[in-house]
Image (cartoon, rainbow, N blue to C red; front, side, top):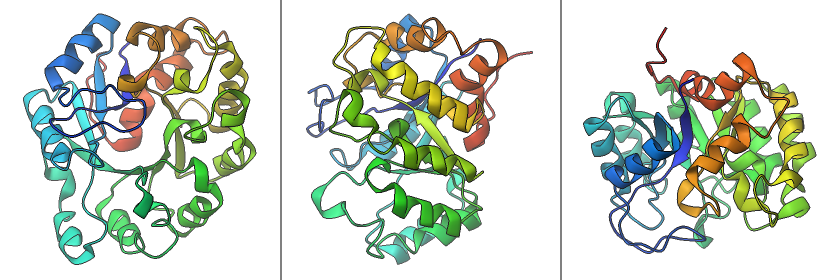
Length: 275
């Protein structure tokens, strides 16, 4: 079974935010070494432009060097629509670029999803066929309106739709809203970063019921394993085996879709799964 990590970061400068490793540089080669040790075949790079403005170029360079290992969900500035609109023309022709991702974690970005700042982006993404990933757990009702208004965009909700700074049961406070969104066929969920939301030890059993409910709602083709490895409290291999060995309800072809086939299909990455 080939495994694709639905969310990783690499960077070349800056001070990583939140619980990410406090190192000024994390290279593609360093990431590949960890992926190889964990048995991870590919990964979708999310440039952390919030701390490294040059991260998009770094991600594209990595995908150009290792096209069979990396794809990218990149960024253009949201505050300069005319310039950015032009950048997005032919976006998928750039090295590795398959779509876009916006976490909106900086203070000044908190309302960009609802104050009109991002309104220009949706029709452009729809016209260019660009999937869009959002850290939408804190604004799922607003996200629903966006997804309903733009059915031609394949959206990805980051980190199971969990609350970014919450842990254990509190992280699932918006679970009902997330499950209701499964009725929209253009919405998928990245089951990324799960270990970071638990105070328990591996295999983080207090998260399993929530993961199962999300999987049941979205199905194996819209529920994507991943790590956000640079802020995980466990090893890369444990991030893998939490899903491949510790979830008895996830087996066979459904496991293959969750662990890689699903994210590749959703973002249009022609990854070589063999056979």
